Image (cartoon, rainbow, N blue to C red; front, side):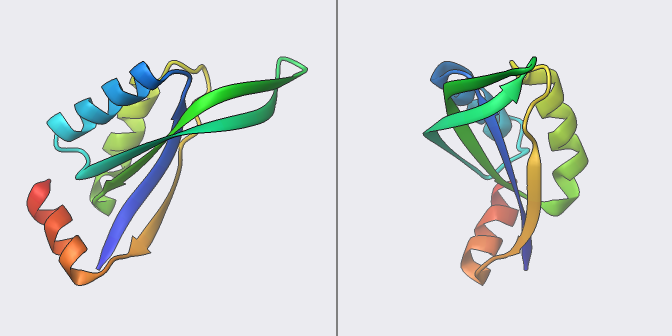
Length: 101
């Protein structure tokens, strides 16, 4: 009973919520969670410190390529964080996810 979880980030809550709603509307995700985080990373040879919004997308494994394409097109970042993994899900959650999308 595998599901796909993709984690990405956005620079603003507005962008994160917009992406979450589009993913749900387009039936690419059953559930999207958003939380505020603080990130430290190197960009253009400089150490950056910034507030970001982490987006956790729960979907079907077979949607992986479509989701990655979607995120590349819609992200506000030149190089968006897109990391993913398949997880085993409890049967009731798995059934709900598959009925939803």
